Amino acid sequence: MSLLSESAESFDKCIHSHYIPGFGLMPAGERNENFYAQIWARDAAHAAASYCSEAYPDAVKDSLETIFRHQLSNGALPYRVEKEFGLVRLIPGLWRLASPLFRLIEGKKRLERPLYEGESSNGGEDTVPAVILAAGTYLRTSHGNKYAREYFRHLIDAVHFFETKVDPSDGLAVMTRFSPDWAESIQRKGKLGYVNIIWVESLYVMNQIALEIGEDALATEYASKYERSKRSLLEKIYNSKEHYFRAKVGEDRIDTPASLLGALFFLDTDEAVAVEKTLRQKVRGPIGYHNFEPKYQTKEISLVTRFFGVKSYHNDFVWPWVSCQAIRLMIWIAERHQSAEVRDEYKAKALESLIQTAELFRDLGGAYETVHYSEKVKAQSLFYYPPRNFLASLAGFMGAFKKMQSLGWM
Image (cartoon, rainbow, N blue to C red; front, side, top):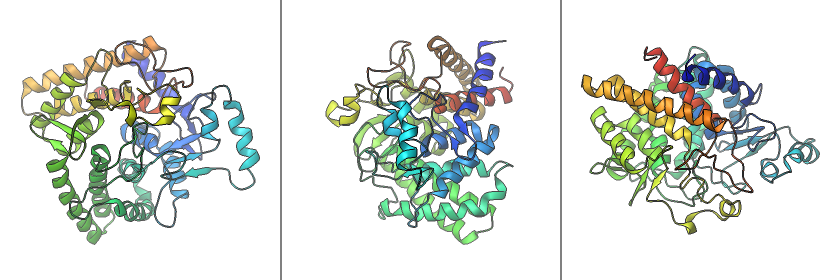
């Protein structure tokens, strides 16, 4: 059996440990790790969109329904739902107290504790568009389409909540809290590239769901908002001269995840090739891609992150889920580009990159959350230990592997 097949078989089984039936998908699958007994909306959304909607539909359904169960009357969704105290888990040596303390303090009131944007030092403003993308992927499967009307009601309310952040002059969302998105260790506000990319795509998803269930008026409304916001996104966030998506309107900083998703969602294949080449030249290193170029200054990193000794957490460490999104873009180019030569080139690049990722995980002993930029060493500190098999890393790898397998590339 090849390394890729062995890795895929192992990782597919591993995802089972990240799932609590009736609750959902967790970023970590080992009892003693950070992020166990927690659903993070963005992580569950990534897993759903990358792989789990097809492979583990019940886990995605439970994740979405746990999130919807805690939706507020104003439409807000929790960025995290925990069955144990997540902050206690972050304190070295005290993870065993997270569950008994939760039962002691919360047990008489509730079995799950939702956290909303701005709570527990997390902005969490990317929650709504992330959940919409997850729901859209799930509802497109044969498993999920029967829940479309039920889930759509939740999503409409969530959109109404998120639109309070949208600038009516251009349709782009303005982040007003620090730690607003997945790169929460970096203190940023304003019209961020990553959040707006998933926001604009979520409007397209809302249009598609509305069409599917016969809500034609709403479909037209979402289509109009999508087209307007997409124009603003490409005008203000996409750097068409240097071929990347900016981290923020008015700031010429490469945002790697934003560039990968933006190319997949909004660009043609020639422009996607240009973006891939920009990222390969400017942010790719020996192990993978760092997230921003230029990097943020230390003063822009949260004090909590610096206290835990991981100021490079989002700023310089490699996140393998990002590398897997780069592979996804290569596959997309290889499938669609008009030139056979380019298609062959990107097929080879995608396969080579997936093998390199499998070798990285093999050498590290797991599909870690974070890795050093220049050497195969898990990125940890005295006070922070990344999960050994991180859900986003597993799902990203499995999604790329299964796609290549379905195309007959292996």
